[in-house]
Amino acid sequence: MDRRSVGVFDSGLGGLTAVRELRSILPSENIIYFGDTSRVPYGGRSSEILHHYARQDVHFLRSFDIKAILVACGTVSTTALPALQRENDLPILGVVEPACRRAAAKTRNKRVGLIATAASVHSGAYERTLHSIDPEIQVISRACPLFVPLVENGRFHRGDIVIETVAREYLEPMKDQGLDTLILGCTHYPLLTEIIADIMGSDVTLINVGQEAAWELKRTLERHGMLSDAASGETTLYASDRPDDFAQLAGRFLQQELQGTVRSVNIEQY
Amino acid sequence: MDRRSVGVFDSGLGGLTAVRELRSILPSENIIYFGDTSRVPYGGRSSEILHHYARQDVHFLRSFDIKAILVACGTVSTTALPALQRENDLPILGVVEPACRRAAAKTRNKRVGLIATAASVHSGAYERTLHSIDPEIQVISRACPLFVPLVENGRFHRGDIVIETVAREYLEPMKDQGLDTLILGCTHYPLLTEIIADIMGSDVTLINVGQEAAWELKRTLERHGMLSDAASGETTLYASDRPDDFAQLAGRFLQQELQGTVRSVNIEQY
Image (cartoon, rainbow over all chains, first blue to last red):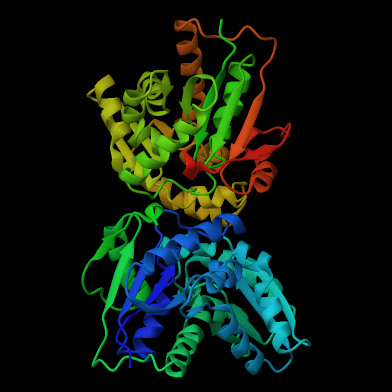
């Protein structure tokens, strides 16, 4: 039994969809969340810059007494995760491997799609992981650079011609390639589930990477005897810029009203 | 006569539309341009963070032997410019004042519109400047947070339903308020001139802030006896992340093919 907190970070708000899953799967855990709103978005940046930012994010979370870290950022998970794991002596989980295991288990025709940020797609991390599980799986991937700014501007509702047009442009060529499983490789994308399902059809299984990572974190904590025995856990939120705006939007990602405030942190100091 | 370079900076690529104007108005000047691509976009960030980033940007440009700085970023011009001017002993120009003087000279019905990033609109800088020139001018302003990501993803062409829908949503309520002059308060927006003109109609004068700032820089250099007497000047580009991608997109903003390479800089060191 271990009542220390779990650390979670993302470039901004998106990782809160993973926190939502954690709250439901691991209600006894305390969570410390950091959103790097002074440098969001991460999705178009280089591997060098992403390593630098991710190390600072981890360093900040480790200024608390934490027992494990969930990297709730698809972009960092696909680029800097091995370095973070090598350099730190606590469990650090990303979103790629759990999602790939679920996708490999779900696909029947071995044609798996991936939508993610440009950095995630270019990293090749999902392909490598899927092929290490099953070399026969074909991966059809597509960078969707406008999804994050559109979601962050509230454009994720059915009937909005802007998000529907962009989503069709990204997804219809993928659908034509006959995939039966699609990994939503960015924690912003669960807010687009309805739009994506409308285009892909009910035969395509959608994989929520934050949800899979939350289950993986549960298994990891169990394995290490690190589950909390508290009656219920708390979530504490930090942001590196505009904490009040972060608080205002957080409810949309958590799908519940935010309890408490969002605290400010100067991430360049870490 | 002064052959030292002029420094220009922006959060990313947008400021290159001002460089295009500078090249045409001041062909003899050497220009050193910095785009902070490791932290773009600036438009949604807080005043505190913007001051910190802007000071680093100026510090980097001053590591060269420069004679003046043009802040080709609407967001920094509306928030951190007075601090930068106070702290530095060389001419530093922003885009707000020249654009406001032109708008005040152009408007006949004293109803001036402003479109810009959220940070620029919330700063109130354009209103204050316009009112200091003519207290009777009414300012109708609107933040357009999706314009920068849409332009950076190449969506600025007539007939693209995505940019046209977003632009109509932002601009039609402004048009209904009867303005006759519209300030395009972000250096990305000149790429949207056709789309914006289609919606606003030919009776509304559009003000290109980069162009007005380039003319103002020329007057400033003249006043200080600082104009270059060289036969022709060069442009040197720096970016804080992904210099190769920056180089690839630069031609779109400069409206001519890029000469030379884009150099990399670690901006956090400044």
